[in-house]
Image 1 (cartoon, helix red, strand yellow):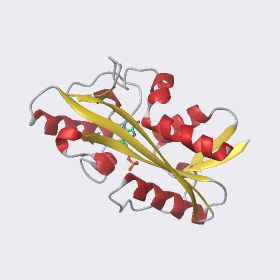
Image 2 (tube, helix red, strand yellow):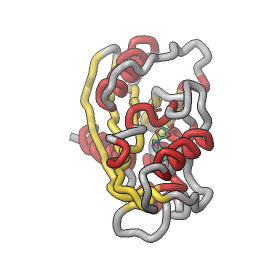
Image 3 (cartoon, rainbow, N blue to C red):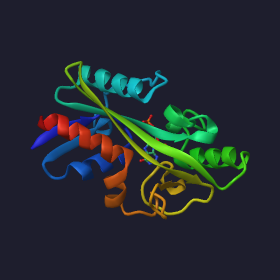
Length: 194
Ligand code: IMP
């Protein structure tokens, strides 16, 4: 059994990563570690924030640490919400508030579909040392009406290219097989095997 600490308090990320890794892995996150530091995501890139999280947490806990920094990049909004996806509507915003703000901003632009992509950068670290950085991306479009209850975040508003359903409507296995997170994790696993 291999162990992996995910440097996140987002249980949705942990669940997806755990599902994708399968039974050979024991996955935990910061929710079970009350004394874990809160990492300020001060970088303006996914890479920078993922590295900050992985390094900070790997200095405090032993073992392999994986950080995931991810978000939705919408062309017509100049790349927003981007690295601010989790706190788009404010520091403690809920997913519902973030989606509401996104839809309102898009309504001002006119149209009903908007080119977008999900990005994910994963960084592996151990003992305060960076081991590697791995990215994944899923192209698609954002719509104005929510559809589906699967997933989290902006899933109910995002239709991946080549599909008619939103991530919120697709089964988790299908989302994982084509998601930004799944693609980044495949690179992480390839690195760990080599
Ligand atoms: P982070 O914790 O700073 O990496 O921000 C991640 C945020 O990006 C989440 O809170 C969601 O708002 C959004 N996000 C990232 N990945 C996904 C996904 O797979 N589905 C939906 N929203 C996502």
